[in-house]
Amino acid sequence: MLPAGLAMVLFALSSVFARRSVRHLGPNTASLLRITLASVLLAVYAHTLGAGFRGPALGWFVLSGVIGYGICDTAIFLALPRLGAQLTTLMVQCLSVPIALLTEWAWLGTRLSLGQLAAIGVILGGVGIALYPSRRASQSLVNPGPGGLLLGVLAALGQAWGAVLSRHGTQISVAAGQPLDGLTIAYQRILAGLVFTVVWWAWQRHRSGATPNPPVETVSGPAWPWVVLNALSGPTLGVACYQWALSLQPTGVVLSITALAPLAVIPLAAWMEQERPTRRSVLGGILGVLGVIWLARHRGG
Image 1 (cartoon, helix red, strand yellow):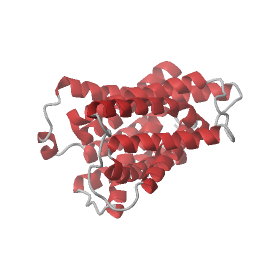
Image 2 (cartoon, helix red, strand yellow; image 1 turned 90 degrees about the vertical axis):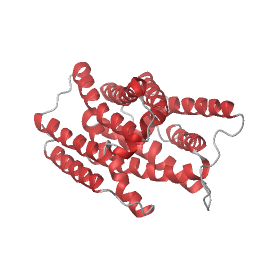
Image 3 (cartoon, helix red, strand yellow; image 1 turned 120 degrees about the vertical axis):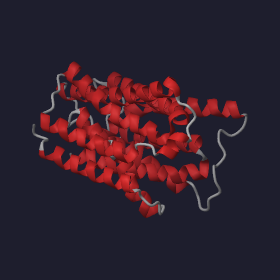
């Protein structure tokens, strides 16, 4: 439970740092710098202290990155203007868990106890209460249509299947007597995400005919500290803890805990950005924490 909890906290911190870097640089450039810096840091580690490209499951980890980064991120980018941030996040977080549970049960034979399933249901209920769009947010959206909903489902499939493939690769490595650490696995997976981000940035630049996106608002101070913190907390240390968690717990358990990252952002944003949480977000957060406690009590079956 500890590595999944660490991943959740690091992902939440990454979201807060990402907001700051986006204010300076705009979303596309901030995303490009974030994943490029993370790839460089992970490459330095993997090719010195880690296993680099070695290991019997390299193909599985690369495929996991293609699905988890490429397909999932592309679908999220396309779904955001149609569904809005809250509904997109809600669909990805709450649908990816049951998809992962069913996939891992059908493919790898992983079974969870009734207590674990009930606890996961409580966690997802908390996430749903906290993230469900308000009536005002729903009315501000253009009619998303079936295309927007399909993109949300596709993003959830990408997140779930990317995680299951990664866990399968971890099991292959352990069975072969060549277990890999989380940072090396994160490096082998992130390369697909780097390729996707570079292509997306170049396409946006071509469309705009200039810089892909000017800063969305005028802010003081340098951007680089937020880019560095975002790269370290999310795709570097956060994903490493995520991979560590997948080596110890079923995918559905790990995804249900990391699904609380948007809720963990709430107190962080209140502290760092003076954003006042709503009653619904507080209620959802409390319910999610209770679900994690219940899940910890049933981790053995």
